[in-house]
Length: 432
Ligand SMILES: Cc1cc2nc3c(=O)[nH]c(=O)nc-3n(C[C@H](O)[C@H](O)[C@H](O)COP(=O)(O)O)c2cc1C
Image 1 (cartoon, rainbow, N blue to C red):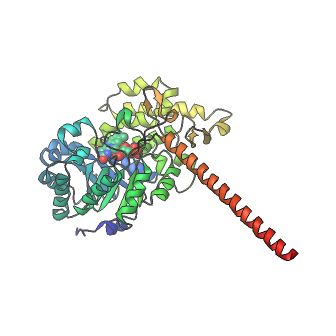
Image 2 (image 1 turned 90 degrees about the vertical axis):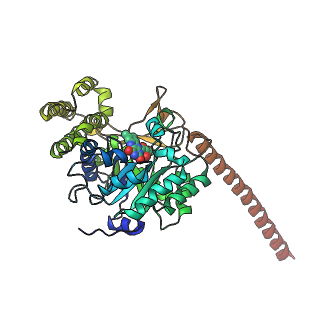
Image 3 (image 1 turned 180 degrees about the vertical axis):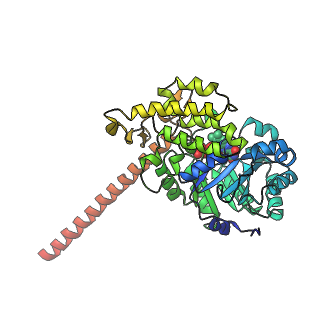
C-alpha cells in the first residue's frame, strides 16, 4: 500500500472532513468503544494515549494495547493513534509500528496527572518547549504519515498562542486545544473556556485545521461550540463516555441521542464479543458503569453485581448482567404512562442563565461530576484562563448588555431630542 503524506488541510479532506471526534481516553477509547461511537455519529476517533517507550520496547504491553483489528480499514478508520513521550527516538519507533494502520500520530501534550509529572510527559512538557519541538519535528521529518498534537491552554492567552504556534511550526498538522489549564483536574476541573479557543482559532489562521475540546454535554452543544469558535470539528471525552449518542446530529431521534441504557449496553457488549481485543475486554467494566451511571442511582442493587464480576469472567457471566438490565428496562416500558414519561424536557433556567435537560434515568445521559459532595451543575465553576467563575462571566455579560442598553437608551433620548428640535425648527420655519 502506498501512503501519501498529506499536509493538514489535505489530510482533513482525505478523511472526509470529520466534525465529531472521540477524544483520546486512557483505557476508554479502545477499539470496541470506537466502533460503537462511530455508529452514533463520531466521524474521527483517537486511541487512548499509549506510552511510547513501552510501546516501542515491550511486546507484552503492545499486545495488550493494540490488536490486529485496531486501525483496520473496514472497521476502525479514520483513526489517530496517540502517544505520550519525552524521547524523540522512542516516539518515532513507536509511531513507526502503527504508521500503516492509522491516518496520523498524535502527541499528548495535555495529560495533567501526577504520573505524567513524574514521567515528564503530557502537560508537563509545557515547561520544555524545546523538547516539544524536537518530539514533533522528528515525527514530521521521519514518519510516513502526518503528526498532530493535543494541547491545553495557559492562563495567559498570548502565551497559549505562542505555544500553539511553536507546536505547529514543529510540524503538527492538526491541533486540538482543550480549553482548560494544566491545573484544572479532578476536583478543580472547572469549565473549559471557549473564548480562548475562539481567540486561538482566529489567530492561527483559517487554513489551520483546528479541533476544539471541552464542555460538551449534549449533541446541540456541538453546533454552539463550532459556531462560536469557528473550529473544524469538536472533540468530546466525558460526554461521549456517558452517552455515545452525544455525537448524533443527523436528526432528533431520541433513541440515538439518548438511547435506552439496555439497548446501548447490549449493542456495546455484542461489539466487545466480536473484537478480539484485550484492551476492549478489560475496558468493558468501566464502560458498563458509565453507560449505566444514572440508572445505577435508581437501581443500586446492580452496582455490586457489576463490581464483583471480574473483567476476565466469561462472556456468559457478563451476558447475565446485561440481561438483568434488559429485564428491568423492559418492565419500565410496560408502565401505562410510559409515553408521557419517556420524553426529554428542557429543565428549569439555572443561576448561570442556561438550562440542563431532564432525561429519564433509563436513557443514556451526561454526568455531572460532584465537587465536595456538591453536584457541579448547582455551583459556579472556575473558567479556564480567566480569574472568573462561570457566574461572574454571566453576570458581566448581563451588566455589559444593560450598559449597552443604557447607552442605547441615552442615544435614543438624544436622537429623539434632535428630531424634536428639527421638527420644531421646521415648524417654526413653516410658521414664518
Ligand atoms: C477517562 C479519561 C481518559 C483520558 N485520557 C486521555 C488521553 O489518553 N489522552 C489525552 O490527550 N487526553 C485524555 N483525557 C482528556 C480528554 O481527552 C479531554 O481532553 C478532556 O476530558 C476534556 O474533554 P471533555 O470536557 O469532553 O471531557 C482523558 C479524559 C478522560 C475522561
